[in-house]
Amino acid sequence: MSGYLDKQPSFENTDAKARRKLLDQRRMEYRRAIEAHAERRQLQQQLADFPELIAASYLAGKQALARRSAPPGR
Image (cartoon, rainbow, N blue to C red):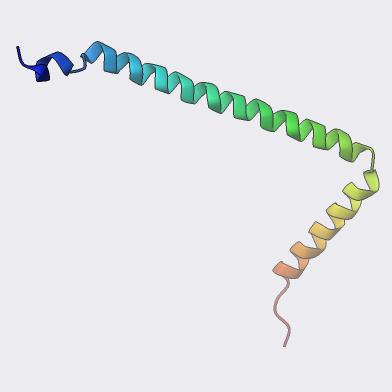
């Protein structure tokens, strides 16, 4: 037999690799979502100690939005 036929990957092997890769991708997506959620919770807890920063940030955002949506002056 030739070496070419001996080295061909079986379809079962490639299917298993594809499934494993898909599972790994899903697992990493889930892990990133958990980490992002944990970071948001930690930031919210830190900001809860300084409610004046939340109010100031809200007002600054409102003012910036008002400036962007205002008609241009002449």
